[in-house]
Length: 133
Image 1 (tube, rainbow, N blue to C red):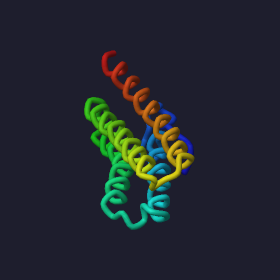
Image 2 (cartoon, helix red, strand yellow):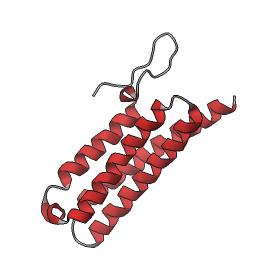
Image 3 (spheres, helix red, strand yellow):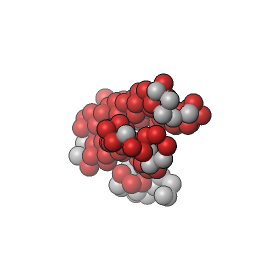
């Protein structure tokens, strides 16, 4: 995926696909999809489905909020995206405790999801402050 691009005349992001935040969320979801096809998780249909849905929900909410084309809705959907990132972290923790994933795999996803949550929170804060002006 390409780096963040903005409209040169207005400085605004033209489409959600140009957002680094969305790109990172998609990469995590794709990695979760691949990860869930191996090991013990491969045949745990319920957890696999829930984990995939939550991981996909992060980028879905970023995209949906962007498409409403107004800051209050976008902020609300960023809050949902951050919540989904927390849900994925929780599910991965359960899988680690149950012995379905190794600590190393858990830690790699956890680190990426914490970083993504911070990005979402920072962008949400930026939009909230911009909205106040």
